[in-house]
Length: 394
Image 1 (cartoon, rainbow, N blue to C red):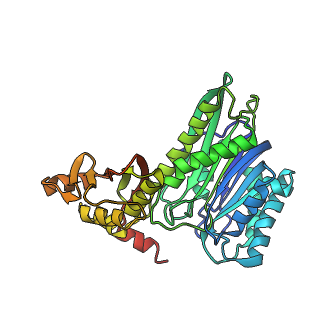
Image 2 (cartoon, rainbow, N blue to C red; image 1 turned 30 degrees about the vertical axis):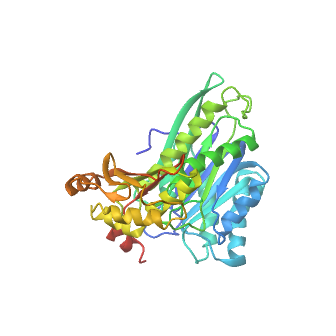
Image 3 (spheres, rainbow, N blue to C red; image 1 turned 180 degrees about the vertical axis):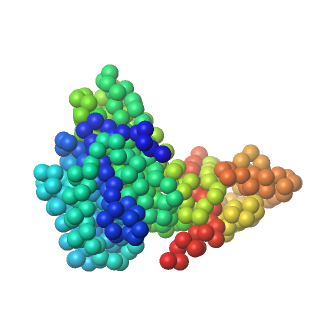
């Protein structure tokens, strides 16, 4: 699927199986920069967070990275002091293998909460990953990140910076336990452009707010959410910051990669077969519009209605009403795509068949106007089917 994509200059990657998962499924990945790279990171806001998240937050203070090493299958969350030791050892062993300081290695895990990592397998895997790393092993790397994902997720963009073609390549995994603020969601973004670290951190945070923080599969926020971005400057440009001529081009490309990866996550939602965009306008503020949109997007009643291709606008009204946004029911309008179902808080005379036609599509929008102000927000979500239950009973 991604055999035609190769890493930005100065980066290599690999994905292998070390036996964390059964049947030889890939379960460890490495992203490696030949030179120290500026690093930016955004992490879960869950008060219960995994050992690797704690390690990454600590290492981010140094602002420089050489590698990201990750495993799938076990989250290394709620694992106490032993889990912290395992996460640190992953960084230490990787650092030994590539010749850098442990704080230049970022560690990530995803999978089941509770079990301890099989550190012996992981240490052996790190050695194999370092030997196997190559600029063209994008597909294998993306596959190794997957848990309940049905397909790997990679986005690649090229842009002209300072007269040179630079590349941004991003990886992501995630299909369930998804409502980032900042899901078992991981994303790793690499670029060969040089960027000042503080500016890079601000740009990544904004890009995440516009993308990963706009999606929800099931309203559950994970212990392991991590987005890491590395910029190694291999193209030789003068380091970019907010006042650079090409800053806007770089930020636009970064946001595009993040947005594409976020949309891939929603399209791959566990058991989902419908992609739903919830737009809210006319709120008193953007924050209140966001509250209303998330309330609609996370409603299990709405999600199951969409799965049954049942345009129950009453459920939408209900979920807007119990959100923390200010609502005057006598002003609310609701459209399914461009078909109006509600005007002034009451149903229109549109034929039910017209609404069913909209929600029978694999991709549709619910557009809500509160008519109270200028606030607006968009949240991307999906339906909830029986398959979601089957996936999550294990």
